[in-house]
Length: 257
Image 1 (cartoon, rainbow, N blue to C red):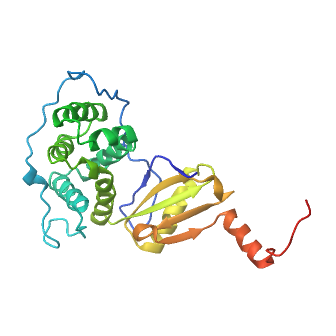
Image 2 (image 1 turned 45 degrees about the horizontal axis):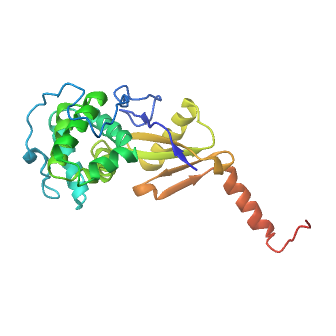
Image 3 (image 1 turned 135 degrees about the vertical axis):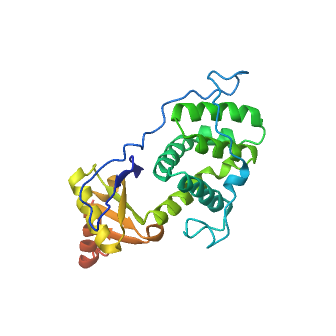
């Protein structure tokens, strides 16, 4: 089964990717203990900067400061609103790192199920959320955004919000996302070479690579990029074997057992 690794960010301020670098701000969350029964929090409540829900009201299509395509879905509107706030205070890159941390936390189905459970009180969800915020070292506006989702009982949208935020972020920064799948982790110089190739194909200012381990490829690698990964460059041995089998047309051959 294929498994994602930590994302690798490859950026360039010029027409070509000059080097491979991992974003220094993309630090993932520290482990935290998820308690469902404690009557009091085991951490110091954070004093967050005040942000109201109006800060996260998305502007109409085409009228926002971002000038990016906004999804009409609730998750898309929330994601665009968060990007608006991040862009306005100059923390777009750091907020993207926050969203990566959030994605990692809520990929734990136990955590996601806890916040999606309507039986659990908002107060209890706030307690656990404060622990997540503290252990993940999220920015105040990101933490307030999550609290707004809890208050609005919309935190079950968080996985879709993460996906939509990535789309908006890539549009704002003219970044092309490419998913590189391979049997074993590729070296940094190979990823940089792939990034340059994707940049030439797309004309994007920046290329962001996500690596994925997929043993079924046998060897080699594949690259998916474009809108929703619609474009594929397949350099895998699996594809080569399939093409050879198709050319030989061995479907009628029966092997003796």
